[in-house]
Each structure stands twice: as structure tokens, then as C-alpha cells.
Amino acid sequence: MKKHVLFIALVLIAALATPLFAQGGVEAKSAGFVPSKDIEWIVTSSPGGGSDIYTRIITDIMTRLNLVNGQTFLVTNKTDGGGEVGRLQVSRVTAGKIADHTLLTFNSGDHAPMVKNTANRIENFTPIAVMAVDKQLLYIGEYSKYKTFTEVIAAVKSGKNVVIAGSKGDDIATYEMLVKELGFTQNQIAFITNDATSAAITSILGGHVDLVMSKPAAADQYVAAGKLVPVLALANARFTGNLAAAPTLSEVGAYANVENPIWRGVVAPKSMSAEAAAFWSSAFEAVSKSEAWLNDYINKYKLVSEFKNSVQAKAYMEKFEADYLKSLGK
Image (cartoon, rainbow, N blue to C red; front, side, top):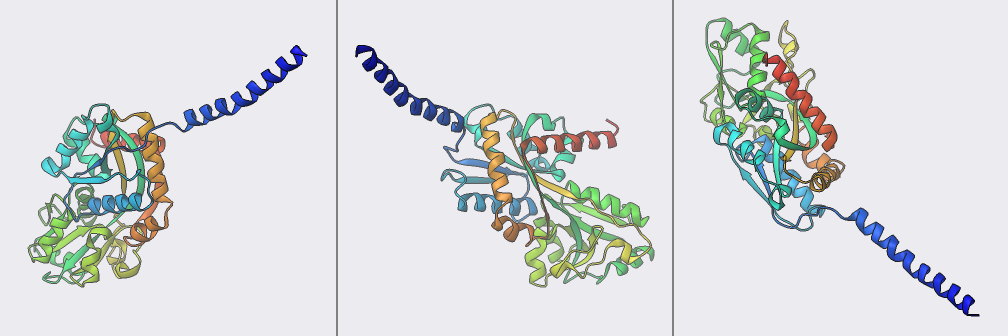
């Protein structure tokens, strides 16, 4: 009888203990990083530019989807040194809560000049995600002397100098590709570099330059208002919607198309914990799959949605850096 009672007692203990162990296993598996303070998000271009728009749309979607545990995003625009000060600051954040709550908007237009002009490298960051691919166009303003890009080419051939305003990084690289393909010098078609596309657009709205280079996002409101008109698609195919009238370079004359796709992503300090990096990568993936991302950003600003998680983004950015260093002979 005693043995029978002992057996029943052991069975009951085991039955009660099993859910506790199982629950502990679930808690351990689900334990990880969750935002617990304000999130500082650094943007190394001015308000109103393409990177700024991209950042603020993502923060809005993450907040609406309740992906950040009710915490607040603090978006800070740091343009000193062409953005290098902001990038260096993020790369030097030490481990801890600050590192886990710090993000940096990072695209190919930031990566290339960083590698070219400084000793900072992608190994000093934690890649989080790549979200989309962007391309540029050339626009004229209401005070521009030329109405088509064909007129621009004719003017240069007749001995006149033309000035294009744009931003740094990818805009400069695309400009250099364009001038080379046209067979002109950088004196014949000059380029004025601004801290952000918004500043470049301001210059053409004031009639200070002949053309402006911009991605669709930064120029969209001005195109809608009739202040800017796209005259050349720097892509292998025409854009759609209100940008469809802009021809590609091969449609303008006996030239090859000029295209320099810009990837848009996000990185964090190298010191960010693995748990936080995994959380943020998943959060960005959720954004990329949302209808708001497609409607409010991808479709509206005519980009290509191209999500890469933290592992894929790391490999992608490392290859971009290696290829760019090779092109520089380094």
C-alpha cells in the first residue's frame, strides 16, 4: 500500500513539474532584447532629403505596427564633414543600452565616400538590413534655360557651360558616369555638391543652377506642384507615373544608358548585442512586408523593394566595400 501511495506521489510530482520545465524552456527561448528606452536614429543628411524621408517613414511604420514596445524614435540629422562625423560617432558607441538603442541610416552613397575619404570601414558597424534600391533622374526648374536634355547637350557642344546640383556619394558617382558617357569634361558640365538633395533642389528652385540630380523621393512634392520637371532618367528603363516622360540617355542620342542603383539600408554600432541586432533585423523585415511600406514608400517614390536581413546585409555591404576599394586601387 505504501509503495502504491509512493508511486502515485511520484507521478503527481512529475506531472506538476513537467509544465514548469516546459514553461521555463519557452521563456528561455523567447528571452531576448526588447527596446526599453528612446531609440536614437542618426541620419547623415539634411531634413527633407531622400535618406531623411526613408528614415522617418520607417519610424512611423514601426510605431504604427507597435514593433518597438512603445518607445520613441529620436531622429537626429548630423551632416558635419559630409556625414562622416555622424558615422564615426555611431561606430564608436560602446556596448550597453545605448548601443542596443542606436541606429544609423546607411546607403551606398554613405558607404563609398566613407571608404574613400576615411579609415572607417563596415567592420566597425553591425549591418542590420537592406530595404530598397533607388535610382536618380535629372530635373529642370521653372527658371531653367533648357527644357529638354537634348537642348543641354546642344548647348554644351556650342561652347556653353552647364551646372548640375546634387548631393554627395552616389550623385557624384552617377554624374561622373554621365559626363564620361557624353564625352564631355567636368568643366563643360560642372557639379555642385550639397549636403542633401533638399539643398540642391533649393538651388534650382532659385534659378542658381541649370539642372538638379535627385532620387524620386526628394523631388516628388516639387514634381507634383509643377516646380520640377524630369528630363532624363538615369536608369536602363523609364520610370512610371509622373516621371514617365523623362527619356533614358539611349533615347536621347547614340549613348549607353547610365545607371547607378543606390541601395538603402541601416546599420548599428559594432558593439550592439547579438540579441538586439536580431530584434532590429526582424523589425525591419516586418516593415518590408507591410502594406504601408509598399504604399507609403516603395510605390510612392518609385523604388524597388529589396529586403536583406542582418546576415545577408553584412555580406552585401562587405562585398560592396571590397569591390569599391578594388576600383580605387586599394
